[in-house]
Length: 611
Image (cartoon, rainbow, N blue to C red; front, side, top):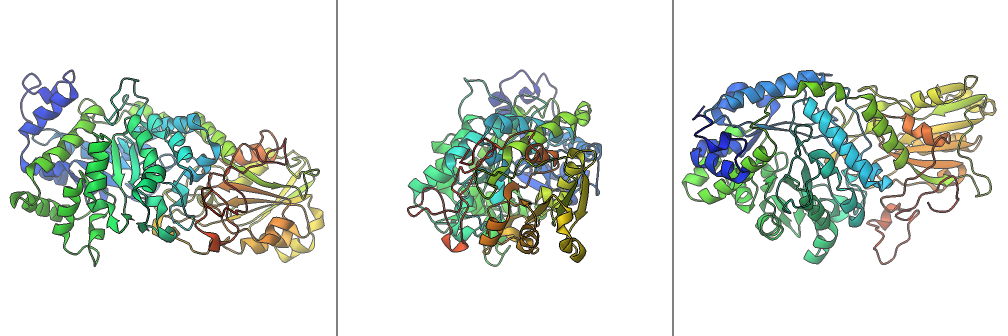
């Protein structure tokens, strides 16, 4: 490692950040600079790869673990191993390790899994979201990572989009309010903190990432990675607005979107990435690409990679989530600089931004994991916070056939309850995508409480709970034995393009299960989904009560807290609930607005009217 602390300004923790950045940049060779711009996946990462290529960042994709069900300490061992390799390089520049902690530290076994953003949007509770950010930061830091790829501040303009559940709302005002996750993750900057300058409060916080810049939730027909066809004025009003709130909170990184704006791919859009975000809005952190996004800039996928590197870096991408072909990326970018097609000033600007965030984040002083944080992972306090989040996210869509005869809250002391449906006892379904694996999984995938577990814990000592995933013929023939039924149906997990859906019906014969029971006994339907789904008239008519539970995560008791009446319903729809898919896109600012349930709808126990 070069120089002593006395001669190296960049090693002096008391020197101003900008002086440290300038000093370190002046000492770096071209390979060291390009290395800092390179982010690679852990499966191709070894200590020599980091040291020899001066790699700036490592990440893991969804479902990429040290090994299955690895504990947080195993993650910390892995990441610290990578970090020690980075510290052994000539200048000792630490890596920044990034992870998709989008509803808790969701890749790690045993972590607290919070409701997905669509559910949090129903809470309208900015302080709750800030507290979730602070809890998530502790659990991320405990595993050794420094950077969470969150929040997603997309405006959900069409529920056919496969990433609907990653959005807080269709309404930019609600998204702006709930961008408080940034202050939870990074800590709250002082009032005098300059707008757009990265901020991190301390070792218990993580670098946040506002994504996906910009317009990802507004694509035509909700097609993932598609084309957002709007005027600049509409882009600014609906899609850009939440980024202003994130910049005011000192968000350190921004991720570019796979999508296009009026036919121009965001990863090659100089106007939006450089002129707007960096110059006009004054963003001083760094722009990260999305996963293999450069390969998407040409047809067929991955062709003419050198040109893809050129147009994205020149557009304003500072760090590239390569994530596998790092040798090709480094070779091509080196060649582009040597040929003058990418200027040295563009490279220096990118590296300056990356180093700024690393200094602000305290990585030079505290590069390794603080093992004292291991006890925070899945701790009681965090699970209680997740349970509170679930309670506040539930939206009551129907309660009783008329306002004089509400069905909820349920009586917990009846003789016998039937619990059924594909989602009643499936923790993976309850958590949704981006949980343990990228697209999500089924079954007891981590530590948590299913709806069935919670019902069994909540009912009286003399109440018998009968569970059948699918009601048997025998049960259907003897429904009079039960006081009521609780049916849990909904979507199976998905992520990104795998979740694009033009039909939006309840999968796995959900409608049939509901109507088979609801025609014969009083039935509560709990719908697990990442977005509004088609509610058939018969389901709406026959069900005594209907609750939108979204994708609530690991703490199922939050649902029983409310349905048995210990707490009231507080949730309000974060999006408009359509009647038929041929109405889509349908948002509250539309000219002809005729939803099944409007934006903001939600009943409670004190009123048959809207909350």
